[in-house]
Length: 196
DNA sequence: GCTAGGATGCTCT
DNA sequence: GAGCATCCTAGCC
Image (cartoon, rainbow, N blue to C red; front, side, top):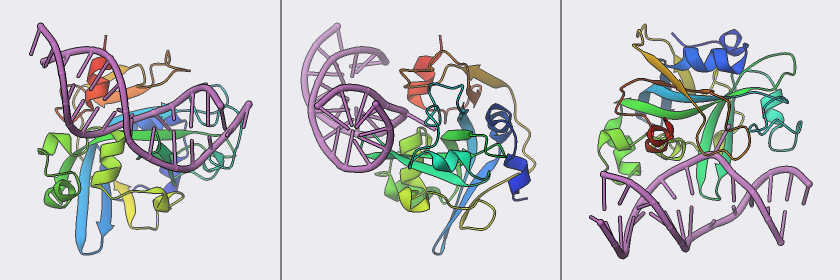
């Protein structure tokens, strides 16, 4: 069942926790790609110094202030794209960064984009995930309710969830807003090292 | 096994 | 012009 816009219209940390175990889906021409979300980070608005929305809306971050259920994709370190889901409503900024998924369908297609690495290294990081799913800034602003990218609930029940500090931040690093499925071999390497 | 460092270009001050 | 919500490889235990 595809998640609808109203599902995303909640505070980012709540959406982040509920996104664990859901399925990220993309139709790419004839191919169908699916992966189970195993690692996310929540970014809130003005009160979060690690968030792009901290200083208010800018040409880049204004999407975070817009309607929920859209993609916010930006270029990181000049090379890698990172994929966020916009959350909250009524002009409140919020987003959830999808950091890692477990490949379910279209693994061969993902591997071909990722140098034929093993399946647990196809999508275990935000940049890798975008490469495997062919997500670029062209998808910035895409509507998850009516585009070729969406997230669905297939009834999967998550096991133990773990929580930690967010990865790679210089500001706002002290907030424990990273969530992942404990013991999953598909969680990002940087994230693993960040756990005390 | 682990760490350090370089690639690379957009975004905001 | 400085600073990144990263990834990969080489080099060294």
